[in-house]
Length: 207
Image 1 (cartoon, rainbow, N blue to C red):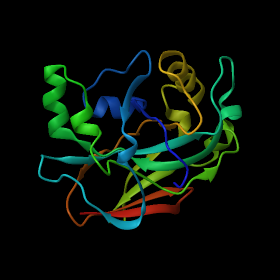
Image 2 (image 1 turned 90 degrees about the vertical axis):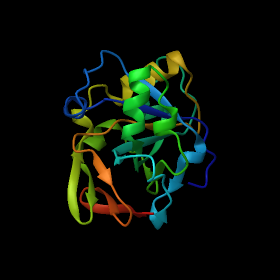
Image 3 (image 1 turned 90 degrees about the horizontal axis):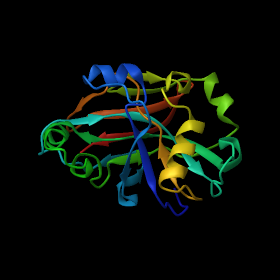
Image 4 (image 1 turned 30 degrees about the horizontal axis):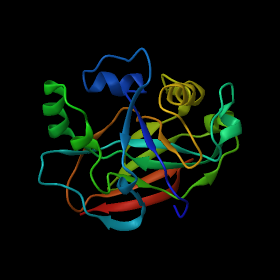
């Protein structure tokens, strides 16, 4: 978290069951949106101040990767990703529903302060190594989400290729790779824990 963060790319609807649970079509190409770097905060057990006065606020647990070098055409993700972590893409769901109907950007629903808490980064041993374990989210000690990169619609390689071709992808960029099924609301006082291989990586309390 002490390294400079550049762009924060996020992939929407990258797990089939998640797209279906919200009544959305499964995308034919990666659906990319952005969060500001100000949205990223450490998930270190402290209370996060979030906009609970704007309708339902939903958690979306995700695998997050960090680029250690700039992507060049034809490069494999194992060559340019240096670390991975887990994060939550907090979403103002009622706000999102309104702006989707109007055809407006998702910024108001996705890009507010503290909307992207992250666990500490772990060394990236290659895309294949991520298949060995699930990540999960617990709310008040009850598991609510579980995912594995093998279930993603678009692989890390496909995501990196797409972002690089359309927007550019460089050292210090983060990619939130999408959330599995099970998203739901939080209220003040809820405690969230992100786990990898069933070991706690980070936690926060909703404030």
